[in-house]
Amino acid sequence: MKNVLLFIAIALLAVTSINAEIPPCCTTVVHEDFEDGNRDGWSDNCICYCDGYSLDVTYSEPDASYVLMHEGGGSAGGGNCEVYSTGLVVGDGAIEARIRNVRAYHPTAKAMGLALRVNEATGVQYICWLTVAGDLFLYKTANWTTCGPTPLAHASLAPILEGDEFTLRFSAVGDSLCVQIGYNWCLVYVDPAPLPAGSAGVLATAGITYFDDIYIMDCDCPSVTEATSFGAIKAMFR
Image (cartoon, rainbow, N blue to C red):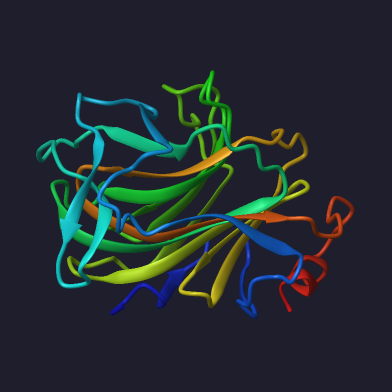
């Protein structure tokens, strides 16, 4: 990873370093490395908008593993597509993935991210969305075709270059959402009207993105609903 961990500016919310160990109260319920060459148990859908392209499984060098790839679009974009684990119901939980930015068809808007509490019928969900320009957004969607219209939170990072690889983790425990990049930084948001339990997945747009080693975790952790400081949330990750 070259530049992902270098923050240029932070907007709206404080971003603080944390211990990145998985909380002892979290249990892995899905681990997908696509070594079997298929995506059985995963379903895809358009998210926010789509121009007909979808995510699919392909073989990736040099790590010699099967991954999800979104390829398609042009200089104006490439559609937003999501793949989620079907039939999964996780309330307090987290999703983590190893992500490699292979190619961007849009110089700034190409993005990759994770989703939690996905309602498979309506598309209502939480999304963390990271663009190659280095903009990290946290969204709460209204349905499969609507993102926003404004993000819950935003932070500015360094740009992500072609070939950069990083680990992204997104957790939702109670009403508290947390995004970690490279296990070192966290963007926290407390939702006054949290979404109910649902599935989890990955999403990408406007280029080629590799996702591998996807972990979905169920976190039977102490409630942070009453937390009023980042310290109360941070204690869960020690």
